[in-house]
Each structure stands twice: as structure tokens, then as C-alpha cells.
Length: 229
Image (tube, rainbow, N blue to C red; front, side):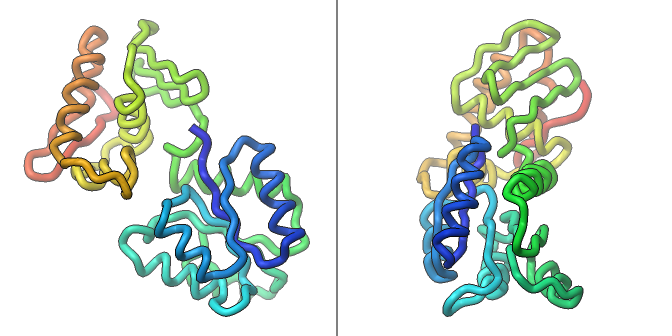
């Protein structure tokens, strides 16, 4: 489940260099050459992270970051700013404007890939390929296998994505609406009760290893994945 990265850069050579290195690292990549185009692309299909040039024609990268942070839908979207401005105050302005990380041009594409992976682990762990292991329940995004105490747990694709999200955000309560946005996608229009159906299927699949108990219903709020049985 490769993360999708939006690269916002108006210099074609840098845009292509960044995109090529990200694709070689296994990421899905979309590209924008202006802040306005970036906002449109984010609205059309929410990426997992944005690599954002500070100096853009028209709307600056800082303005783009502030717009994304002001919108509830994109308030938590990870952002890495690229800039030629190396001053301490510039860095502080970028971070205070909503950036999660800051890289000064010229930069190493390999370091950018490493920074992206680090930010994703911190802000969007469900978008990484790291295996998750909790209380004997193991999910491996690369092989798409789930085991409970060493026993295979067969899951459909939706239940797999749902379990992956819950396991990477344990001990937090998520509403049905939030789960629909994160697991199904915020441009997929399905009933909220669809979440309940898939939670039931997921619990049933986890029953043989007793890991169904890790998924709690929080009355009036949603669902939570617990650290221990």
C-alpha cells in the first residue's frame, strides 16, 4: 500500500528529479506546478503527503500550507517544504506555517526520501510499509498477510485496510465518518453503517485467535483498537 505523494514544484527539472526518486522508492506520485493547481489536486484526491516548494508563482508555498491547515479535511496532511531560503527565521516561518519538515535547496533526493518516510511514520503510519505487531496480531502491508499468534487470518481488502488503519492508530477513538474518509476515501459516498458491517466481518475473522476483543465499540463515538486483550 504505497503512499501517494504530491510534488508541488514550478521548476520542471527539480519536479522531475523529485518525482523520479520518489517513484524509484516505491511511492505513487502526482505533480503540480503552482499553488492553485496543488489545492485543486488535493481537493480531487487527498494525497498521503505533500512535498511543497516555498517559492511558487502566484500563491506561495507558505500560503498553500496555511490553506491546507485551515481546512478540516487537510488539517493533518503531512507537508515537507523545499526552499532556497536557509535562514533560521525562514525555517521558523515555514514550520509555524504548517510544515512538518523543511529542506534547503540544493538537497539530496535520498535524504528527501528518508525525510518523507520519517514524517509518514510519525504522522501517517498507515501509509508506510512497516509491519505492525500488537498482542500477537501481526499485519504486514508488503505481503498483505495477517497472522494471529502465528495463525493465518484471511481478510478481504477492505477489512485489511480497516485493520491496518486501526492498528497504526491504536488507543484512539474514530467515528464512522472519519473511518470512511481514511479507509474508503473521502470521495467515496457510502453509508456510515457500512463501517459497522466491515467491523463485524473483521471481528469475525479475528475470533479464532481471540483478537476480536482488541476492537472496541465506544458508544456514541465510534471504534477504538486497544493495545492489549
